[in-house]
Image 1: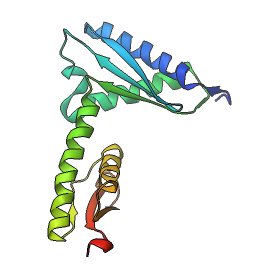
Image 2: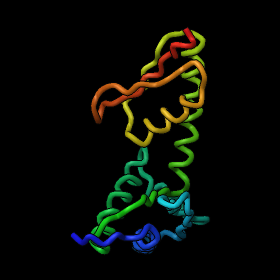
Image 3: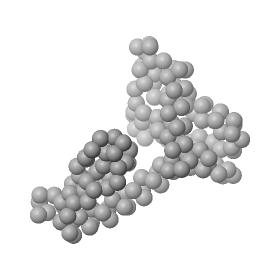
Length: 165
């Protein structure tokens, strides 16, 4: 492995080329939109006006997760070195819609915890979804979160804050 740092822009270029090739191979008309989230994060969103992107999303986003892993493997093969920063992949804004829906659900659960004073354990979820839960609850007075268990059964528990008791 090389000690060379691979700039985030070059990483995104390699992954974009992989995604475009994947779309072509599957006969899906679409494009890859690139958004610089911050200095260390670029988001690539596969969009299409004419095609159903469900094939690339899969049940519960499983195919999307696999596409993300494949893109990382391609990147490591084509650009050996230190991959500083993060390139996130979304397809048809699935992950964005998922984050928004999860945040709405969590706000409802947090409100119930504030009202009842009783903790609520959520279903086990992946690290990305757990972060959405923690971030959402951090914005709400009267509740906080703890994580319990080990992957893949790790879950978040919404608990009443000490100040709320």
